[in-house]
Image (cartoon, rainbow, N blue to C red; front, side):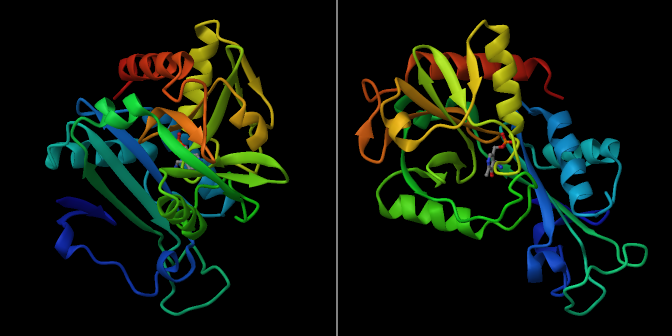
Length: 285
Ligand code: PMP
């Protein structure tokens, strides 16, 4: 696989980053994941804009322009022959060569930028989307700036392991009695045809897929309500689903052991998945 590190395209075995890099020592960095369908990037603009926002919130400078970033994404897709898959991008604060809690001077310490691809043939034809996924609920104990897409993913990883151990696919996190989001996705329920999802705040990641799906839902005259919901309300809902760049719209058929509706993907989630895949391909670059 050819990867990109600080200006160079290299075989993955030759790519190197300092052991003093603050991404490695302190999870001091941000990332994005953009999906590739039919060789094209889905929602690239949205991911680039959120990256700029994440960098800004952490007083980090972008080491490349957003135009360069698109070119690097395209180069990696081409060089690795990706038809369906993902492009992972990470920018960390670099290091002045030692371990120090204070940020180094950005004028003399360049950030570290790394991109690589993941090949996922048939990404949009997932059998999981046909069956739907099962989730458990866990407590949300993450930090308070979940709107910044940092590489600090230890608790979401632990949540994923709790789900695996419980024999299900993912975990929905709950804070003060209300669902925040999934370990790596935004969470939704459907009641009486209405799509309900938590409103944007610092408590959740502002999903790029979420923004697109809500826009498409409104364009299709589907009703959307942005508000908190509890696990009890979710268990009694007609349907549930998640969204993310890598899963698009994925139906949820079971929450904490309780089957939703018929225990199969619901019509709203199915329809939104279809609309999202159709519409986002039209603006893919
Ligand atoms: N919430 C969290 C916690 C996530 O990690 C992700 C995916 N990175 C999402 C939501 C979905 O965001 P997006 O649609 O931009 O992939």
